[in-house]
Amino acid sequence: MTAHRGEPLLILGGGLMGLAIAHQLARSGRNVEVLSRRRNEAAGFVAAGMLAPHAEGLSGSLLTLGQASLERIPGWVGQIEAVSGLSCGLRPCGIVVPFATAGERDAYPTAAWGEPLDRPGLEREVPGIGSGWRAGLLFAQDGQIDNRRRLMRALERACAGLGVRFQEGVEVLELLRDGGALQGVRLRTAEGELQELPAQAAVLCCGAWSSQLLPELPIVPVKGQMLSLQGPRDALGRVIFGPGTYLVPREDGLLVVGATSEREAGFHEGLTPAGQRQLQAGIAALLPEASQWPPMERWWGFRPCTPDEGPLLGASPLPGLWLACGHHRNGVLLAAITAELLQAAIDGSRDAAQQALLAAFRWDRFG
Ligand code: GLY
Image (tube, protein in one colour):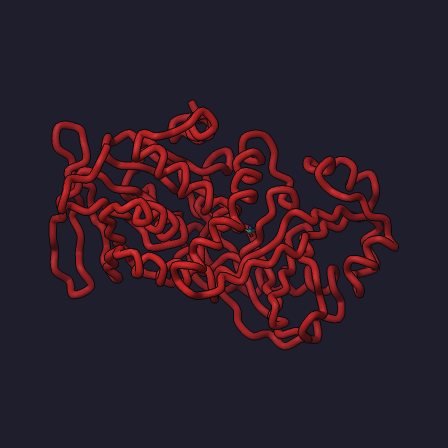
């Protein structure tokens, strides 16, 4: 399906998925407009930016999707950097997953993709690691990107450079239908004006809020609290991915620490003492010296979670509306493949591999 000449394809949501898809479509010459409600609540600004299909222990189609995206990330980032003139802060630094025993290590779902480490190996890869960890897996192919400070901004600038139009502070209130197909959206502008915007094609990428526009979608919020510490530069070379806490060292010594996983919190905003204590305990267990590093920032956000924790990609129950939502813990990793798959779906140009991934992540796969 194509947007009519003069009528933009609408991207509903200005987070990482929205920007990645807008960028991809604008590169192919499409007229694209991004509608964003509140830029800073986008999960792309909240996440730690791990590129971790193996460290996260993914399996099945989600692992395949994650590995496909990981492969594409260097080229995808190169395009964004070339158009924007900004660095995205990609660091192929490897990720270490520590375990209390070798048995736990060997049972990890992605153990076959990692290098097994014993205690001396762990100390070599992560000097100063807590004494409770006796084994580990090194996933040298995993890494991180500086999503909050760099990637999001570079994508915004690349999109604007490619002619994408942006509306910020706009709330989409309703999808308008005509004869069962998308006809446009009803929205409220930042200035409080109600408007109807005609559109025969749109992509829904409103993250945890996606089911508010399309209640058929099985997406619920899973809150995550995070913090960052200022460490010495180069104190930590690898990401450490522990149970319940991970430490992501940026190039300038900022250590991003995540994350709680609170299903019961719904959309309840704010930090909690229990959440912050959990992160503090995780830091002390993983890298005791980091407990002394000063905290720089504390924040929270909402992961968009589906019943199998995989995204909803491609066609929706409403012809003309496409889906790119429900990426749960893996949105930063999956942005590159999501943009490619959505373009293939919208253009009707999918190859067999793209078709297989789109089929695996249909919105109605849950029966
Ligand atoms: N990707 C890690 C998280 O969602 O906490």
